Length: 281
Image (cartoon, rainbow, N blue to C red):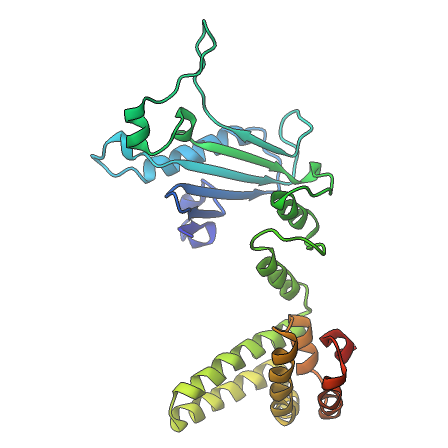
């Protein structure tokens, strides 16, 4: 990831409205924008955005051969133009006005630019219209579009990156208190790792800080309750992870909010259960 709009410190740097800018393995720049509001001149806007990126990444005095290929991906929650499809691709070709022959690169140009066709040199545009997606998935791209439209991932989806996206969605769907507890759990994992690498004195100091964080989130009463059960919960988490694999945010929250009696009951039943859902139900 090269840049995101949230990195821009001044409003004048946000005119391009790029939500994400990344570099792929072919050193092509991919700019991604998610747009909710209808804009009649949006096509000119993405043209400007791609052009701006090209100019920004061509160093002064450099040959034009070093012009960067830009791929513009635009995820829209409104209908743009007339058309029934939900994914459109735009690219530049040169067609003869007399014989309709397509202009292409010479072997020397192909070697210099490391590509086969003229359109490989020019910006490439993708327009994804979420509202027109028919909820039928045929390929990994459709699975991602389904995620953008419904904010959920159906069973059987296998597109690359969806598993991580599902984890993020699960966290976002938690209540405020559950999200705080999950965040506390993540901090606890970092804390335990630091304890293994640090001296006792450093670990003791970090433990005091961790206690303050618990007190701020749940109050003194909740902090005392967590203090009594965190050892039992930590042990059960390790056992469950060893048997069933990584725990979901929902399972972690359930363990973090359980009483000592519940944790003991689950610990005794772990050998008889085939899934974590069966154990924690």
